[in-house]
Every structure is written in structure tokens, then in C-alpha cells.
Length: 181
Figure 1: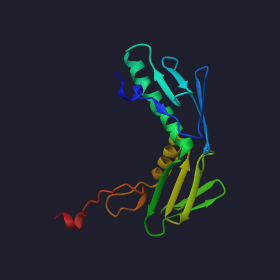
Figure 2 (figure 1 turned 60 degrees about the vertical axis):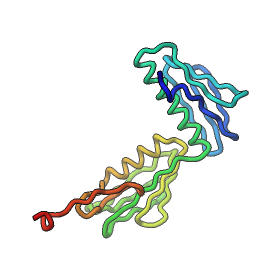
Figure 3 (figure 1 turned 90 degrees about the horizontal axis):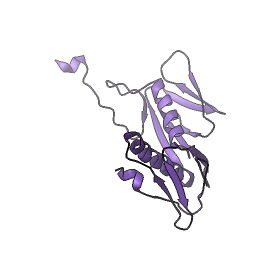
């Protein structure tokens, strides 16, 4: 039995939910998100108790997997419209820097040309200084995907630690050849 799928999702104040025809819409002060759930699971909204419940008809393996997944996606939507999801990245390296111009993030990270990344429409990007990037959005998947795309440009390397890393990421350093013997 799915333990995550059985938990109801509490709806905070200021968030409205609409369930109709296999589509769940969640609206809050930080945006509006919608999800078309799999027909194998059913989603119900109890306006009196202010909670969403996800149920499945049987114990088939696919139904169990979709049960927990649907509940987790809906919970992320509800949390995102009340308080936006946030990712912070750091750029480490001499001369490595980021800048934002309009809807384009420009990264100069040791290549001959600057890397230009278009910012997704539902993600807010802030560059407080040259070496820090803050991403915010009500959509958890969009924030995580764009952060991964930024990090993929120049992942941190283990010898000097240069590259783009998450602010809470620990880069395991290796000893170079001079210290190995």
C-alpha cells in the first residue's frame, strides 16, 4: 500500500483548487498550475475539509506507482503556488561570471564564447552579483530543470572546484598528481 499516496493534501489559506474531467487546477498568490492526472487514479477535492485525496481502484503495480506520484505532484503544486520553489547556484573560478539581460542568461565560464541560455517563461532569474544565480518559480519541475541546464554548462571539477554548483552542494576534492606519491 502506498504510504505517500494515502496522505491527504492540506490546502493552505489563499489557495483555490478545481477538479474536473481528469484535470486539477491549483491557483494561489504566486501563480496557477494545472495537472492532467492518469485515468488509473482518481482525485477528489473536499472543500469542507480543505484537502485533496488521491485514490486508486486496485493494487496493480502501475496503479500503486501512479498513486504516490500523482499525490507528490499535486502536493508540489499546492506548495509552489503558496510559497515559490527556489534554487541557488554559485559560480566558482577566476573570471567565471553570469549576467542577465532581458530573458537571456549569459554565462562566461572559461569557453571562447559566452553561453546564452533563454529563461523559461514561468521561471524568475535573479543575478545579485557575478557569481550567484537565484531561480524562483511556482513549478518545481521547471526550476529544477533550468538549474540542471545551467549546471550542465560547466559542472564543478574535483581538482580545483571550478564550475557551476548548487549553493548547498559539496564538491569532493581530489589530490593532484603532485600529492599522490
